[in-house]
Image 1: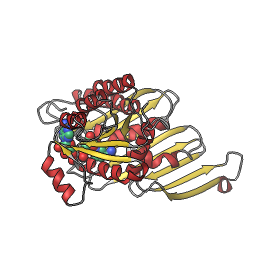
Image 2: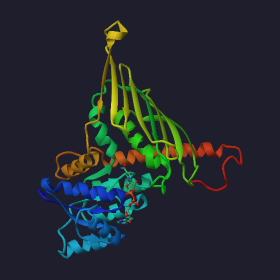
Image 3: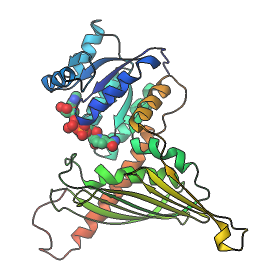
Image 4: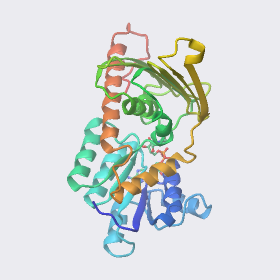
Length: 341
Ligand SMILES: NC(=O)c1ccc[n+]([C@@H]2O[C@H](COP(=O)([O-])OP(=O)(O)OC[C@H]3O[C@@H](n4cnc5c(N)ncnc54)[C@H](O)[C@@H]3O)[C@@H](O)[C@H]2O)c1
């Protein structure tokens, strides 16, 4: 793995999230990261953002090809690593081109529109021996408090509800929102999934806007995840029950409550200890981007690998498959005519 002291970086897709990625790359200048290119077909929009100070100054290119050609011609330095924050449907094509050029990648979630595309990215990264990280900012936020959970999770209950209008409506709520909690669940429960039972409905878009999935793991753990992008209020609740511990996490406010029970103490009041606090990772995107560059330097694998991104997509696909199977069982006329995607 290449481990240049100075890492020349690029951000590909400088929309809402890509703009933040560019800020984080620039913020790591003292740690040897040099933002040398911004890539987006909306060149003028990116230049306006630069002029307004919303995106850091760097040469702007309208395509990956144009950017790579500029590097080959010596107009900009060779790019070692890039954030890919384009619309999800272009992650695979864009990512494969960059991997082929020897660029380490941090690809925003979901890694791809489907597991076939995600697998291609993972296999190509492995073949080229390049870092492929998946952008799952929530993991960077919660890993410290997750590390304090004692014992095997037995039951997980999670609500991730957002108001409409939502962004990312090119994908369904399972790939847009539930995938965050699928990733957290998979990071926590180290056991194969035995069964998935899911329900979901299109309400305001032609994709599923609300969904619930119940996962049963081979080790007996059960997880119940609900995601909606048509909610009146925004909710981000993640609760984990273990045999002698309970963690309640509000990902909206960052507050958590942890209860532990001493199994040797017969008096219930004395047996239960309570701790409350706030998540300490102030800037999880900065933590994610820093973790990626550290992996590029060869310090460790990224916290959320391309394989993790692929696993989350495979599980999301199993949810979508069960939702679709259930919809097919509905009496005719229950939903408006048309094929839902
Ligand atoms: N991790 C998170 O919490 C989180 C949150 C929001 C979005 N996302 C993900 O980030 C990605 C971007 O989302 P967004 O909300 O910033 O979208 P956006 O529409 O604001 O930005 C996408 C940008 O990509 C550009 N683009 C499209 N095709 C391109 C190509 N081939 N090369 C270069 N640029 C291209 C577009 O012009 C646009 O500027 C999506 O995959 C989305 O799912 C992740």
